[in-house]
Image (cartoon, rainbow, N blue to C red):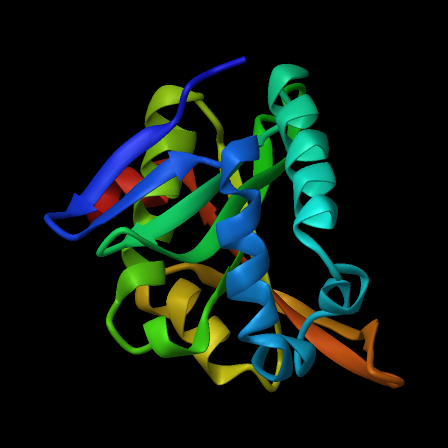
Amino acid sequence: MYFFYTPLDQDSRLQLLQRHDANALFHLIDTNRAHLRRWLTWERQTQSAHDCEQFITSRLRITAENGGFTAALWHQEQLAGLIELQKISWIDRRSAIGYWLGKTFQGHGLMTAACRAVVDYGFDTLGLNRIEIEAAAGNKRSRAIPERLGFHQDGILRQYQQVNGHYLDLVVYSMLSAEWRASI
């Protein structure tokens, strides 16, 4: 298991999600349900802080098994969202980033900074070769992050994910370690 903590600026930081964050996580989800429901499916199954604690426990298990990690994005001492380095394939040296942000925290560059930090960590600390980000084709805010960071658009997975009874196309983006280092 590894420890993950990184300051993003004087008001924001990423820190490995812990069990004691369950109440703050539930509050963030509960106050952002309509916002999250448009693009994500899991918010309906999250009905209590206990549900969040179980989620955190499952993510800590993945971290302990060296399969990735989930970090809390804190801004001005408030939980603003989550970012994950998911599904690490150590054989192929690749992974994917998933993220979401509370509505009031959008538009300030927080998730772009968080993604930049996780990409740096993935390439520089973990020695990954490829990192992917998937975003719903219609989710312009989410797609703007990999585009802003210079990720390559690999393609579109048609009707890949069902959300609220509708199938969404997912845009797949990737960054290679050599490309990331050349862009710095």
